[in-house]
Amino acid sequence: MKRFYTCCILLFVFSTSAFAKNATVHFTIKNFKGSIFIHDPVLLYDLTKKKVNELQLDAHQSASFTIDIDQPTYLIFYLSDRYFRYSLFLTPGDELFLTVDFAQKNNQFKVTGKGSNNNQPEIFALTNMDTQPFNNDKNPERVIAAINKQYLLNKGLLANYIKANKPSTAFIKNAMINLKYFAPANYYEFSHNHTLFKSKEELKPWLKIQDSLFKTIKLSNDEALNAYNYTELIYNFMFRETEALEIEYQKQPAVFYKQWFHTNPAKGDSTYKSWYLGVITKKVVDKYFTGKAAEYAYVRALKYRFSRADYPAVVSIFNYFKKEYPHSAYVKGFSPTIAELVKKQQQTFSKATIFVKNNGTRLNTFKDVLALTKGKVALIDMWGTWCTPCREEIEKNALKLETYFKGKNVNFIYIANFDVGREKEWKKAIAYFQIEGMQILANPALTKDIMDKVKSTGYPTYIIINKDGSYRKTATQHPVNVQAMIKEIEIANLQ
Image (cartoon, rainbow, N blue to C red; front, side):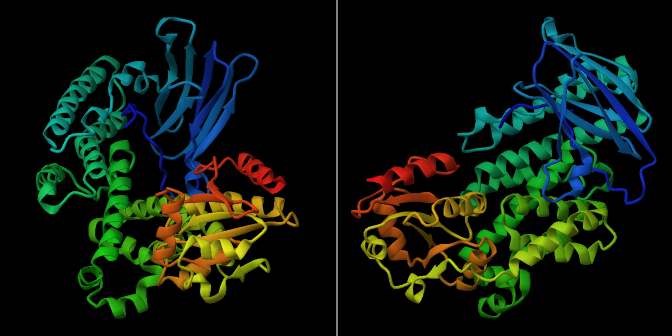
């Protein structure tokens, strides 16, 4: 985990009314050639954006940014090509003048203007945890000891900052909330990154500490939604809890359906299978969150699923979210994108989409696949509808490759793996992404034979078949350099 500053707090504005005031920050960044990147809160309401705006410095190495706010909040900025981050606590009417000189010792960081008492450089002293030294630990004792030690240091540093700089009441309130969630947020993230595949017995000491930490906080806390540690705790909690239910669904469907839907797998699959992620998200939110915290939990779930190109889940989750929060500003902001997703879900197959006989389910060996493309160069994409990087690569590069090689005697073969029993979802994904070329729904034997022969274990895996039937993995794999991929296929096509 990279080291970063607790003061780097993301902004989330929940008001649905018109903004009453604004705050402005004037930047002067001396002896620096690059850009200023700002986490813009307005972009949070756009499902497709990642909340980042870029400011270009002028000839005087300066730039200004105005933010519409009706309540105190935090704004992060960072500089390109440097690990330099800072967060500003802004209230309506603030006007800050921020100067940094990278040619001077300690960068000569200065903040003046209205609101500067909340934004002095000493706030850098409040640090989050670098937990990398504990990555190989089998037990939680060392990491929780380090987290508790850092918590006490931060507590003292914050007290000194308050005494020296006399920050506003709003700043103090938010900083104290953020401090309160420091240990639970950092421990939860670390422990769940390292205990996913542990046995129940191995999990006991980890969960015991988690339970003790969670007893000190409110998991659903509307007043904490401006505190970085709290918002990150919600994000990780939603991600890990829904992930755990997905794993339970895959490994123990009977337990999953009995606990969460009070039914059996046969009835459950017929009702929930195509949209179970939306149902899972709703059940996690309903169980743990209320009010604005629940609204925010839905938003983080939606942004997360969208970033992973899991669009059926996005639409499913949004439908629940809209029903629960019909007047939310996020509903208005997300609706145009959702409408586009729904429209694309209604698409039919491309005319260039070819389903192999019996969907290819009777192909058992790599040799069977090679027979489909004799005398032609082909690119095989070993993917799956469940695979996030697979979906991302298809969305980003499939059409580019297919368009470039149209009419050039190159075949594209998309082999879906571990999707047997999900024919409906598989075909929906093919139509949604408008995937052209040959489509194969691989049985386990075919998947194993191909991956064994090319000595690969991960998905997606890309394989070039030459005209003579020889084959090899492409040099460029995920994340794909599409120009390098084009060059590899062109060279094979010339031979």
